Length: 324
Image: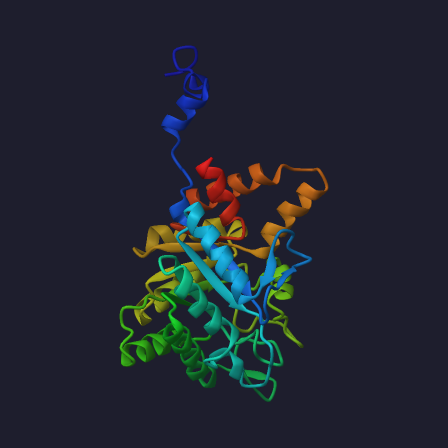
């Protein structure tokens, strides 16, 4: 039917109509809150490039996890800010390192929240790259054992899920085999399977102190122009044992999220990354946009594209808004 017999505005006429027929909705169940753990006590160090975000000592990580649980956020993901760095990233898998301590602290005080850990070496290597360096080149295969050791150390500390973000070939299989051999076959892997080499990561590199000291990460992170490669990467990680597939970043890759949703039958996570967050907050600070509205619209677009889970620095605020 055409106008005047058909009038689309009839069902937009009031808030209840709009709520009743809304096709895509954000739920608290969709949200994962990223947190940055740093050594010390009572530390809440602002991240200059990410307004409203902080590097937190374990006691404050616990407090934030408690707030997240109270707001209905089901999961947090932990990133470590290393106290020491070396060529073999030894603090990544040391039992007394920051992520391991933060995991144990949260699980002791907030046992019912799901704790996910980012598994990578970049924050712990003195060169800032995501794998072992050999004569200026990342040695993919030599990195796998260290990544698996890191994942195992997180799980032994109490992590409920591990999320390898390094983009080394074969790391999901190596981690899966290691966890299975150590009687952790029940621990799921959320793989950063489709991680693009993106300019949107800038603020995160300040937050985690993990900027590469030379070169870039284009030899292991994906080229932004490639879509079919995303299918290949996701498929390989599924075959290696991944339980959830992640796309990172989210906003510039909504088409990739959509395509993967058509191709695979696993849950898909999307990371609303630091640069996306910081641009929205900067717009608010300048008085150009309403960040609350823009953030919610952004998350709706990610969910509408096909994401089942969304990692977002706005998770706590969004959950509280949904509760209101």
